Amino acid sequence: MRESALARMSLAEGLANLRKAHHMDAGYYHQAFFGLSIGLERLLKLIVLIDHALTHDGALPATQEFKTAYGHDLTRLFAQAIVIRERLDDEGETLRWGVPDMEITNRILAVLTEFARVTRYYNLDVLTGADPDAGRDPIAAWAVEVGRVLEDRQSPARRQRDERDAATMQRLIGDRTVLLQETETGGALHRVDEAVLHGRRTEFVQREATFHTATIVRYLVETLWQLCDRCRPGAPVEVPELWERFEVFYNGDAYLRRRKTFLS
Image (cartoon, helix red, strand yellow):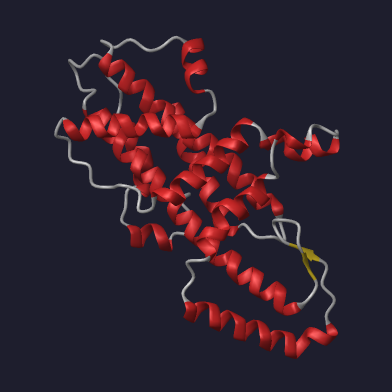
């Protein structure tokens, strides 16, 4: 129960910070990555552990065996969750929610896995002169691997509207404004229209990224639900209804899209 509470709060805070992330305050990105990587890892490990107990007469894997098999590798853990879910489906369980876009799902998990395993120390590694090939700036990695793909999905109408607004702002205050801003990938923003456009695109990207990350959580919560349903008295292992802590995530796409926080 405590592990599920930790996972749920980490995910809720991670999604809330991701929704607010922007180039003017890198702290939101770091907090989002910490919360999401920790929350996903712990939720995934609960799923793998419960499934192992159900399929091994209640026995759980040894600590070192479990660490060696998965470590902080979210992609490997998610692959195992897919195997578990497919088996549940083959056994006749009703599974309602998939992930709407596996490409984006894989990209999100890849960046968060890199953060969990290596790049959470990126800033300190830069300061202490660590090997520059040891990992990428996690914020830049997110912008490239996730942001650019989502940005390309903006509708032409939205893109044109944002460009008109940016041009208007440049015309009104561009000559009287000095900007010293930097994008997530380190590019300079000196013009008002550049800053307005970047801000609008980032807002779109983080809204979409928050939605897609929430659908990953929903996919896993449904899997946890089905496993907990098998852990009734007389089963090889008995556990409480852990999935109930994650009910806020178990909703339709429209609900997940409009949520700005999952803390309540």
